[in-house]
Length: 227
Ligand SMILES: Nc1nc2c(c(=O)[nH]1)N[C@H]1C(S)=C(S)[C@@H](COP(=O)(O)O)O[C@H]1N2
Ligand SMILES: [Mo]
Image 1 (spheres, protein in one colour):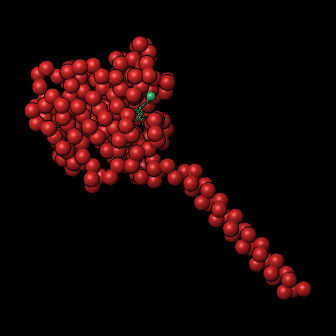
Image 2: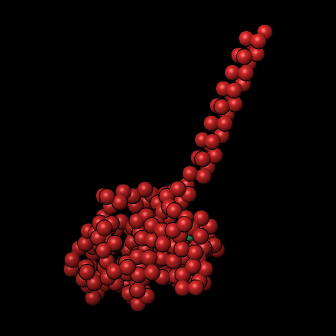
Image 3: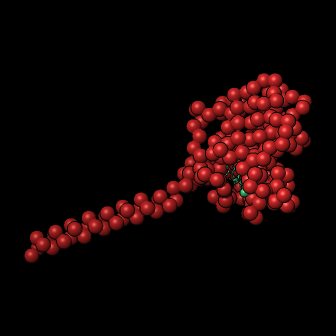
């Protein structure tokens, strides 16, 4: 009888261990978002110039095909079109430009948003290096998930718009657009291209992914969502 009891105990213990293990795996699966693990929260900025920032964990995000995982080692940003000098910039090239930090609010057209500190390189720096032609009117941003959007070159230049590689002092997490997100100040979220791999300078009008679906090509925050 005592032998039977032992077997029963062993069986009970193994079942208990299997269930516990399964629960741990399942629950870690639920919280294994890149944003949980990919950065050190103690390094995240909580305020900038006296303005309170929304913690990254509380910021929502949005993507047509889910998170894109870009390899920092092989990444290249191509700048082409109406330029005298085409550029192919590595991640390290991007970090070598003078960096600029700004407080900018991101507002999705769906009605949610967040306040963040963005750090990156200004497009003016890149446009000047590429020697953008005088007849250029618009710039297309192509992304790794085949998303695209465009903005007037005048808007980008006059507002000294930045391509951000950091968010609240943290390197952009994969789900947030690593290596680059366009900080399209005062424009709805769908202009804030993530996972940017190409920048084309053009002299005609272009409609990006959501713009083709009827969303305003102007996209001013507070303005109409549709055209
Ligand atoms: N490449 C790419 N960029 C994108 C999108 C996308 O689907 N793909 N979605 C846009 C939309 S609709 C919003 S609201 C913002 C969300 O950006 P966030 O991750 O900073 O919140 O990303 C924009 N940039
Ligand atoms: Mo959005």
